[in-house]
Image 1 (cartoon, helix red, strand yellow):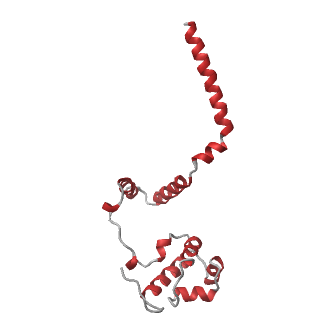
Image 2 (cartoon, rainbow, N blue to C red; image 1 turned 30 degrees about the vertical axis):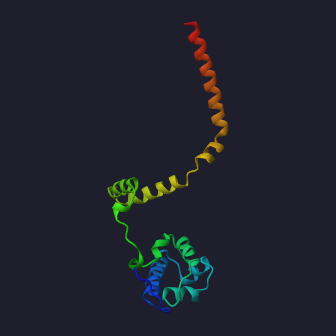
Length: 155
């Protein structure tokens, strides 16, 4: 996993620039439109795509967000450390096995979106939002418990 230390353009900046260009084109954006989204000018985007500049750590999350890609997408494959399935925790291995078995393949996108919803689920917010309903239910439960106790005494 070697990263170039020579000045741009170099193997690393050219590879990263190619990934940015592909992601931008996939998103259907012009260089000017992407520049606006990442708070740069069109020339800066052109230099990035041509590997003529090092891309800052501040810019990569903006690219990821603007182009709907994970941050890791923008790093060339040759610098990414491969993770073997044995290095994953048991639950992640199980999730991966089930994910790979999803058919038809377009349902994989549904599964990913579902995982994102679960990831962002805030149970405390749900309880706060439904406090009145929960309190009404608990009051009803107390009434039923009291009724059951009284009924049990009569039998």
